[in-house]
Amino acid sequence: MVVFDFVLKPVRSVVRAVNEDALRPLEQTEHDTLEGVEALERATASIEHHVEVIESLATSVGPLTASVDRLTDTMQDLVKILEPLAGMEREMGHAEHGVQEAEHFFGFRRNKEQVEPEAGPTES
Image (cartoon, rainbow, N blue to C red; front, side, top):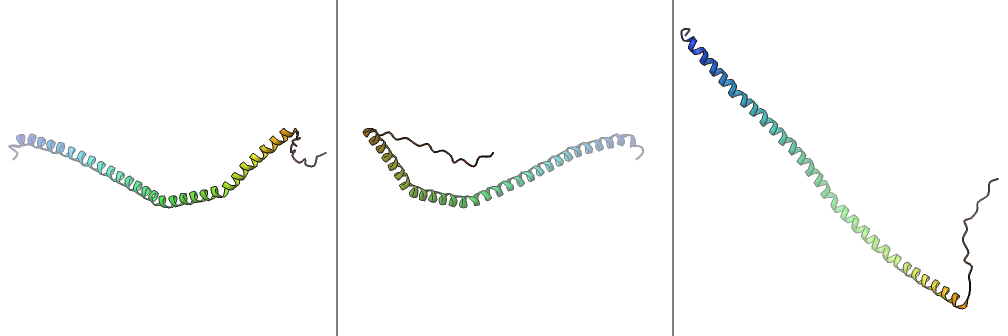
């Protein structure tokens, strides 16, 4: 074999170079594939987290709706309670206006007293 070594040696070098060149793209492809798989795993974890958040929001909608309904009922009860008071306030306004018109008609002049705040003890 030594006789053909001068012919086989370059052939072996070419074959070795071809094999190394063939392996480099495979290594790069494997690396790219692993990066893609890792990216998919991260995306899956993120999606799972978003699903958990959406599920927690969905479970809180029912109690929130019930709370708003109770608040609406309470507000309606308050309106029913305050409605007569508002009517009485309107009637008092009409009555005060009527008294003022009567006083004006009869020529009465009322001194409107100004309410002064209570004076506390003075410091000397």
